[in-house]
Length: 168
Picture (cartoon, one colour):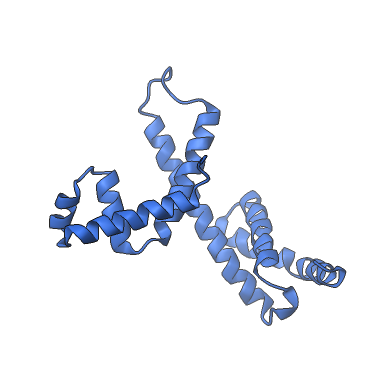
């Protein structure tokens, strides 16, 4: 980033930070979450484009902030569901804090990957992985040829492998 772009970004941040944080605080009802999501939104601004090209800054920031907020709520929902499941474990068999953090990170990654799949591909993948249906059973349930079920599973698995940072 050039010095001129850096100065433009600093000016953009200074001009809109307080407004955006207030906007988020109204929607979230929590000052700390609003502060965090404000910073996440400005990170998106840096990644998205040169601030000199932004014609309607508040509309642009609101759109980015809505996406950031949506992802925040999805992560929170995943974490809540995971913690509810953990409550069913005996205290001696519950995972460590580090394992919990790793598991939450993995669940969020899976959620992101699944969210990018076409609905039918996602449905096939979930029926296979969560309900442990065979390809034939999925084919019958969704009225799809088995070859299509196989193709959808390949597409879903490829998306998982390409997104994840698995050791090779």
